[in-house]
Length: 293
Image (cartoon, rainbow, N blue to C red; front, side, top):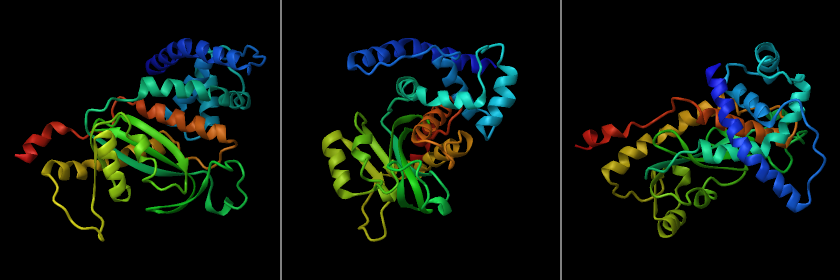
């Protein structure tokens, strides 16, 4: 309960500074519409959504009816039914994005890893009839097989913290978003073999002074590599447990969405839940000097 109160206080502080600016932009753009007061505040909706991804529940309805309605009634007297709450969820998409970037991302220490993972929006038998994520999902190939959905690209540091992220269609090449993801970064960037390209490597070093280090493919010429880069390249696997925790613990891999906005809301809440974990996968670079010696 203490962690839930801490989460609410942090989210509410962000909303108090973000929501007035957001609503002023509505006024200046002429897009403001009548906004009725709801029984739940934006910060309360965000807290309940993020807490679901931190809990052990696998379905939101079970979490809301068994935990929220039973145990949080005193803290949130304006709670509504689960169907009504789901209707409220799309309205917090922008506040979730505003909360994620300044408060949940880490800093670049000079060493970063990059990888991508596929997120399916439906099972394979339902692909021909799927219409919910039209324009957001596409057929693509990964190392584990074909997928219909989108791709999540991420850059992380050696402490398991996010530095940048991007969402693309499922058929986008993993190398295409790399230049945009590494802006304002420095030092070596460790990636998988499928992220290696001589053109991209030269562009990153020339434009951003970022050295892309990846495994050499079988058809490429072998080249000498510094020992420290070779050791860190093997430790690039830190990205894999990060992806696994986001998919399985934070539950962002879901194939029964009802709208594209709900897809984005679920992704943002899962990422925030991961970022607020007290313990994340880390490299432990303090042992590297001993390994090199």
